[in-house]
Length: 291
Ligand SMILES: Cc1cc2nc3c(=O)[nH]c(=O)nc-3n(C[C@H](O)[C@H](O)[C@H](O)COP(=O)(O)OP(=O)(O)OC[C@H]3O[C@@H](n4cnc5c(N)ncnc54)[C@H](O)[C@@H]3O)c2cc1C
Image (cartoon, rainbow, N blue to C red; front, side, top):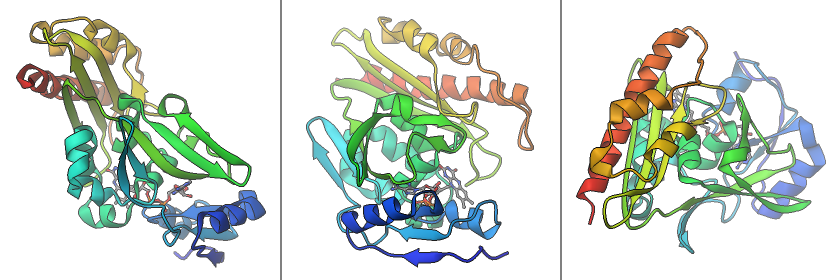
């Protein structure tokens, strides 16, 4: 199938992009890597009169370090997360999540901002952002605002972004000191969206006591989901004493995934528990080995 007719705009500056989004409002859609939007348009699941292609917008891509954060501009390709040494050094969870996204051909085009704005609940990057406590910089003609990952993802494919707003970047906190990270998922085939996945981040004090713990699940609810009870159980524990299986059981308590063509809700729940135990074990091992 072919998409319905639209008018194509390719602004070169942020100001011009925001003017177009303000002018056309609900009738316009941002086009980034096109890896989710183009299939949606081609299958006529949605249609827009105006597409605002942000690929040429000056300064919308790049990765920088800023005051304890790694700032990833929205137009940065997902592939860059795997290749940029500062990502592996400062936010290892991001570097480890990227290869799990689709196939490298898709990651060569797909953007970090596109993945966050599209907000597929089975996506890796929204879950990583949620686990690490990332913030998002958003711009419109009305001004700029900063949103927390904890409140940005509202429901299936829905965020707090308004039609005239552009996501311009994501600020990932650098968890420095004695820390450990893990991300695991199960998908039917390499490159498919996860049936269920889990991202885990831990930070310990010098005695090996966990000072911070974050577990975010993906593929199990209408948004990425934070396992608050399991995090509370981990906080204050000595890393070497943690029973990952027990914490994983607590992490999925309260979840009720629905059946779909890929897996029954019960299977998804069992897989979720399994991937939490693996991601947590990876993170615990890293904390134990960290100096
Ligand atoms: C076969 C296949 C397998 C895939 N598997 C996975 C997977 O395992 N994990 C995963 O996470 N993803 C997967 N994807 C999706 C892929 O990661 C997309 O790249 C991503 O979802 C969207 O990024 P994009 O840059 O291509 O955005 P686009 O497709 O261009 O846009 C997606 C949506 O985000 C909006 N948008 C984009 N950028 C902005 C912005 N800066 N501000 C505001 N709104 C914006 C668009 O308007 C649109 O609504 C897969 C895709 C395919 C085709």
